[in-house]
Length: 465
Image 1 (cartoon, rainbow, N blue to C red):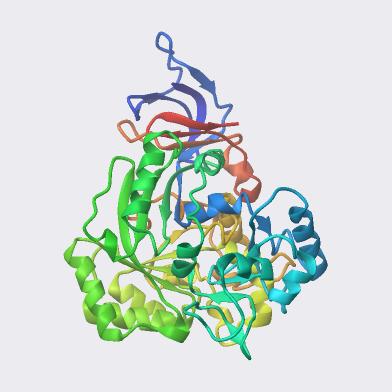
Image 2: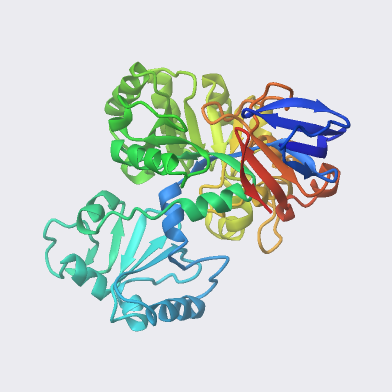
């Protein structure tokens, strides 16, 4: 393909030829070869293809078929009740809600759900991904009853089931059929936003999940290159073309941290398999614990911190000393900022989802969306990185804001080295490209409203507008 009159490197307008998966020629007035497709760019910015370095692909695909139960779609109990009742009126079988937050309904439990949906089994997931709440029909479908716990992990209050199930997805998978939704629709949607690469950071991924992703890629259902994190079962696994094995993901919970020595041994074991490690850290305590373990066990290239949601200066300095990469989600400042202002301790608020401050401390930084727990659009995340404003207009950490160019760079690094600068768009470079409908100067102040005209992965057109 010949892309005519594209803005390259935020400046010159040139023609760009793609052949054999790479940029073959750059110049002015290039003539099309016989049978070569020509795309007039009209001066639109031609950029490196985007990569989302932290999301949950299967959960995102499932969420598209689920009921939205939290902001921004649902803001209060009345809206939540209406959404659940509407969903219950069509179809049969299980209903699945996602994205709930206590700001919508602080009393969500079995009884609340029963008042609005009694006839069909229903489960609603908290936006953290750590809590499911079931109605009575759902509990019955699982064979779970009131009284003394019969080996199930459900919460009981005075012997009666509350409907709440915390941190027990492994148990739940033994009672419900494993959901393997098609990845095709969400992959096409991401391609339409310029995304050519993804890292699935689900900590329970194992060999079966790696095989599932590889099969989806081979069928053409998954258009992006994919890096798959998971647990220790992936230590001895190898990737396949288009699907790489990623880091060993440790999902820390402040209230139930693992034994320190056991954790250090697990880190060392993955490192012996030439595999980096990654730590979910959304509290100050979780981050301090992860850094202590990495300090003790040793680090290797590719080790990273996911979220670093609260990173005060002393911990930021330790991250830099250990040469770890932080993969953050600037979109959470926009999507959850108002809740953070209400719920997060005042001492922690200055250090929420830091950007410029981490860079200034020497921390390697990359970006992501954490979809479906955040909005999957990387352009909105970039806008949030620049604006640092909540839905209601509150500013959180104005001094953490990035320039539009720095925000874009968070989403263009290689999958296995996400904080690295993207390769220059030069002759011979792999043609992972994203073409906008306007020059960079016209869109840099409104990144959340960008229109992507076309997306190429290794020279193949995978998305167009």
